[in-house]
Image (tube, rainbow, N blue to C red; front, side, top):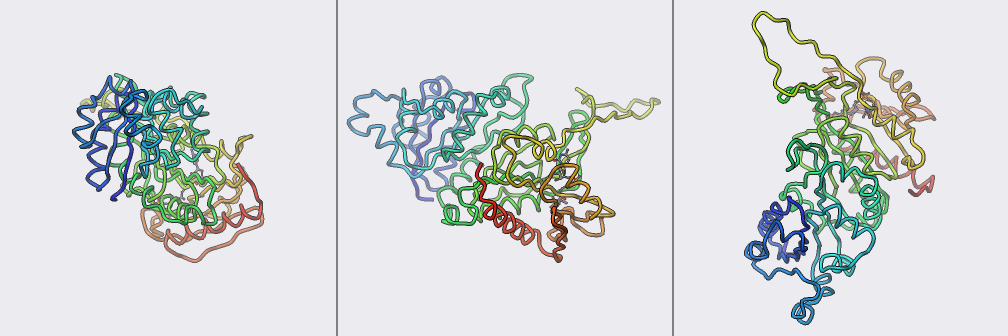
Length: 409
Ligand code: PMT
């Protein structure tokens, strides 16, 4: 990557990670210029950012020298990509409403270059309807997002979705955006938003144990990659997996079903939603605050379970803002087709991709899959093939359906 990146650092505790991001981008060969908002300067200094970027740092819209030598219009245009990290709730709100009352927002309003935002904020601020509205607006305006991630916040005792993505992940996504293939403008899903869930969920029992399943995320990740290759803007909501992030995809990493639901809702609207994740049907009713102890002579603990929200069912039943095409999966170990057909109607899905996950099939974790596409019209059984090929065919079918129905979100 011998490209120019303008990094706008917003005012949040995650700003310190953006110093590492400068290093990661430069390691990839990028020339990095930095703009610090006034609030960002409470967390990191222009001196530190300048030392790492090996360039002067820009802070003030009304700095006459800057305006004469290199005004905000030039800053906005003399770059190949703008990264906003951390993108605070305030900065996102200003971007969504087109404000330009400081250097960062003026640059963002004046640019015609791709913009990647890495949000970071308190989970309640991220899930607030105002932030959700702003993010939807910015996505519709073509802003790419990475994160936020689920996890512990800097504030003691706060956890949820709101952590900024790691610098290395932001740098990887930046590289993808800078080298994006032309198919993103021209493929059959160009201009469409595809939402995919993938992988297992982990439901905590106590701080060290959890309930999980055998999903590797291979099938869901392959679908996200196929949708991106078909030109879609893709949001992949992934449970804990050990796979590499698919190229050209905005990925939100979660642990639990509740976090997956919040991330899916936050990513809407979408033209197509594909639910390939193996979401735990139940979670432990009360997660223990401390590790459960084995005490000599006492009985083994009994875990009381409670039902998790059904993400597919909830999204398929919603109105307005139901994705035009909702595709679920059915993972079965017996009577595969009968169960899949029941699931399609019970969950109001348009299509169900049914697969046998009995251990002998090797579907969980393997590279191959044998699936049946169940629709209102009937069942089509596909031959055994790689998960990549299943993904490519499914996306081809979905793109064909969307084109035939000419729907727009
Ligand atoms: O990840 P791999 O190792 O590649 O394996 C792929 C796979 C077997 C996980 C995948 O092909 C698959 O079948 N995914 C769905 C797994 C599953 O949970 O199926 P289910 O029959 O229990 O659920 C039916 C549908 O409801 C699924 O679309 C599921 O995502 C969705 N669901 C289920 C429960 C829940 N609480 N929320 C949901 O959204």
